[in-house]
Image (cartoon, rainbow, N blue to C red; front, top):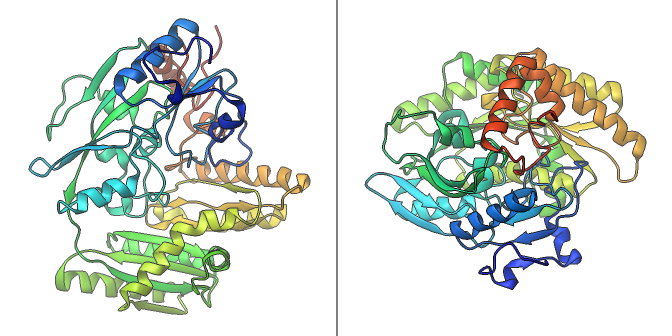
Length: 458
């Protein structure tokens, strides 16, 4: 790169070879457009990030922060002429404070690596997206990622205490605080969580930790239809049970995992519902049995509280592998709608109807316990007609989620794929407030431009 952003960044940390730039151009979102970056910079410190941002401000160059590239909405996709800040080399757990129960990490730390480091200290970082073996904490913060246990323990925003970041003026600042309480000023740390790199570049993250969790009991149920499984989820909610996880996986997903990993998990059912209870002692045993009864009364052909931990863990591992397993079969477009839990059966019914009407195969996997569905829209490579129908399916699922009082994205983020859906969900007045925030915090418009909130040109 001629005139590298900063002289003190080693040449090996600045990538300009077009062949090498290719792997940084896009995330895992099918069909989201992307461009060719000017360069990729792999910084080692917050000061280097600041210097790159200042260079880009001076030269009106777009800046796009990137974690592991596991996103599913196009949020990390390059635009032509951008500088990509890849945080793969800022991957250290800087501190774990066992007394105050927090961890300080760089944005490139992989989620499971942080969880493992915390476990060594008898602590636990709860947010656990299905991509936790690969996704980074910086990316999780950018999209406010959730995961399997968020039905009981909350999402990333609930655990972020403090952020170090480079703002729209090229200043290195801290927002939030490490104390248990604090209300001085606006919640700028909370605003940054879920902003998808459009308001600044995060360089350090302080997250709240919990004590190690109790052992879990697993409840499995087999159902003939996703609607029946959805009714079981509503029954669990109505019974006042708060599971530590409640996941839905259909047979198509399990079969794809089996074909890939030979795990032998294909169930003799159309849908498997996987619940977990981590309440200690006899109370937890009773809750697990009540959940099993909810499954049975909702129409499960088979429901059991598992006594085989290895088998239970394998089922949950299959849930995590569902997306990459199906991705091997052809172009895959994944949804991320979230509806009220009592509306889950109706949303699943509407997804089935949309799929049949457009003759597009949709596999179903979901964080069912909090109404967060991930329908996986499958097409054959090269079938442009099917691709066009799949886009219609995608758009109609968004519309139906909004109609049921839901949202177009529960955890994957808006990125590029959900911008039109977000506009419908928010409405003109609220969208205008988003435009005002974006303009105030990114006055030069260089942070991840054209994503999430497209500010109208003056």
